[in-house]
Amino acid sequence: TGAELLYETLHDTLLSLPSAVALHLGEMRERGDVLAGDVRIATHVCPDAPTSPHDPVPFMGSPVDTRTMNEHEVDEEMDAVVSVDATKGNRVHCERGFAITPTVKEGWVLKVSDSLLDIQERATGRPPSTLTLTMQDITPYGNDVHHINSILQPATATDAPVVGVATTSVSPVPGCGTGANYLTDLLDATGFVVETAKDFTRGRASFYDEAEYDRLTSLYGSMGRLQTLGEGV
Image (cartoon, rainbow, N blue to C red; front, top):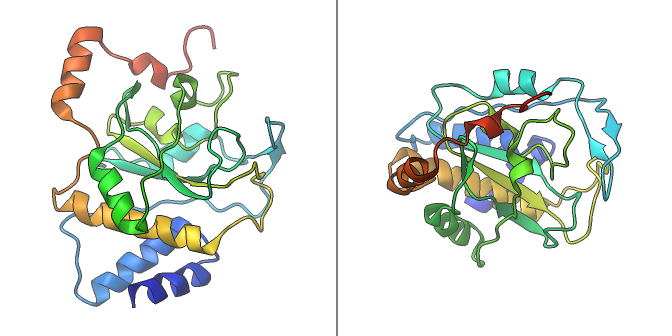
């Protein structure tokens, strides 16, 4: 069954959600279930990631800076971006499973996509779950302000709409807690990403309301400066 396939996929890929999605899409293609558009998947694996102080638990960092990561993970041809990240080192989302963020586009935090909420309900059989964002969460790392984590860093490097898929927990768990991956939650999140790829490439799902976005920018102008390090940095 599809559930068994995803379960085996997660084991085979050492609980790496992007890798699980890639393997599942590959299995689909072998069986003749080909998506209507292209899906590009990128991830970063580091066997010796550094940690740094962060409230309420330490951050797990990377020896590669965010700008370099974005150069390899964000492609200018992408029409939309799904950014997957463990988001357990906080006290603002105290629920196990996965949550999706509002859509972020060119410095604007837009409303949560109704299309993606529908997919989340379908993928999990439960009410949707969303992650709270602040303005500073969507700014680039390196400006010395608090970020919930790096989940929206791809939004600093593209004009395409970006939605975060955050695997979450009830209580704060540090990223360096390597055993803190919950198989059923990863299974649900993988299913959500695959279903999103299906619907988006078929034109059945949208990440944002283009007319409303145009209305916002006509009223208030560009928020692109939030994609930069700002003045004096």
